[in-house]
Length: 391
Picture 1: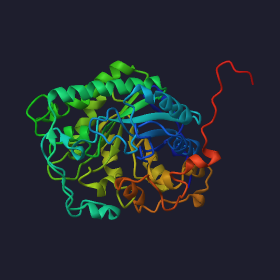
Picture 2: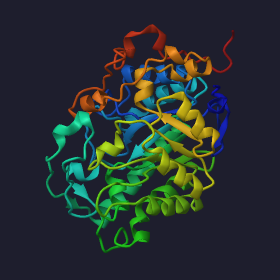
Picture 3: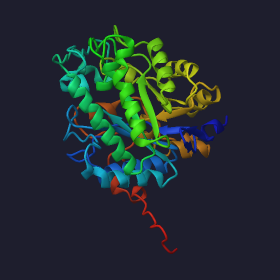
Picture 4: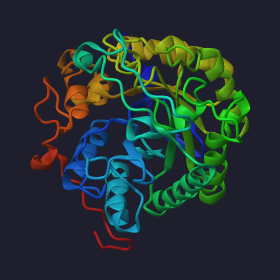
């Protein structure tokens, strides 16, 4: 069986992506204490771009550290002093003919003590994947409700970070509206029970997301990719449903979003966010694909067969691999060359997630190189030739 469908170009916004394989945004915890790019961050992304991914998403990155985890190893593009590392990272990814997009967040939200409404996260029995069962029953305190003035400040800080991202040379951003983080909680009828312009009705719950999109587009221009990540269904009582998300996707498309990147579940239903089986998210992505004309990106693929079939059938446009590309960053090249048996397969054990959620750097049980790429010469960032340099 061939996999040619995975290696045809696709246009997202004004950019052509060389193939249909993306490295999904994957938190690694290896930024410096101020959210800056380290040598390990650079070499980690070189490995995935060099391995053949046409689209490389930079992990969940903070546009501010008001409601994030400064010092945790999470990336932050919230200050000008981080620009030099950002520039190096964009160049390192693009050196391998990959498109570089940053997943940009307004904050972690209710797990950091703030939210649209004072509704505490709950980790009920049966809500976690097998590697994270110990989190069940650990309910968090009631978050403080953000004021309108604080929300408006978050919007302005976000746009400033978008501009930094463009100045650094990235091809675009992905607005992070999934997983129950701060923006996602504004979208959710479960978490957002405000009665002002930022909540209550379906339309008002979309206010913050639309403000971020409109202001980012005005600041960055039409040649800059702006996508949106959303959970197709939150899988919690009173949360966003697939029907809700189809409507949101249509509205975002009308507002000029360049693509939709599906996820599933929330921090309160992590067994959907980090599924123990392949293909769990695919039906929701296919339903979103029926609702919009823009490209739809779907994660949770591990076997080339399922990924190629999804693209061949027109049910998704791009497949994004997270755990699969941790296990083997050369997955795309090996599939293209027909070396399927050489792929170092992800075990779906979620030990990578367990490490990160417990405060350590992400690791992989089948790939000991993960987190240590900076020591491997084959993953050193390539030198960029100066303009006009003699050969």
